[in-house]
Length: 142
Image (cartoon, rainbow, N blue to C red; front, top):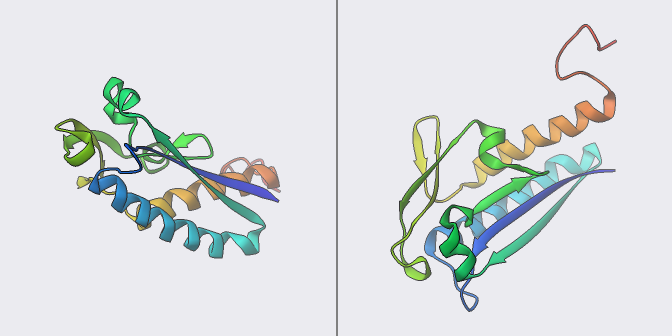
C-alpha cells in the first residue's frame, strides 16, 4: 500500500487560530474524508498530520501558517497556484497572512475542492511511480 501524506501547518496560540486557518481546517477534514473514499480502492492510504506553529515562528515567517503539504510538496506546487498575502486578524494580529491565487481567483481559505484536486494529482504520481510508467510518455509505457 502506498500513502498520501497531507500535512497542515498553521498558527496556534493557546489552541486558537485565526478564522481563515480554522475554516481551512474544516475544509481539510472534508477533503481528507473524500480522498480516503476515492483512493482506498486504489490501495492508497491517506494520512493526515496537523502541525501547530508558535506565535514566535509565525512572526518570523507569516507565510508558513496555513501551509498544506501533500507528499512533501506544497499544495500550490501541485496546482500551479501562486502564494500571495492578505490582511488577517484575530491571533495573527495585523499580519499579512498566506492566501492562494488559483486561476486568477483569490483563496484565503483553502477549499476542499482545491485540496482534493491536489491530492488526486499527488496520488496519480504515486500510481505512475508504482507502475513504472513515465508520466504520460507513451514511448516508455508498454
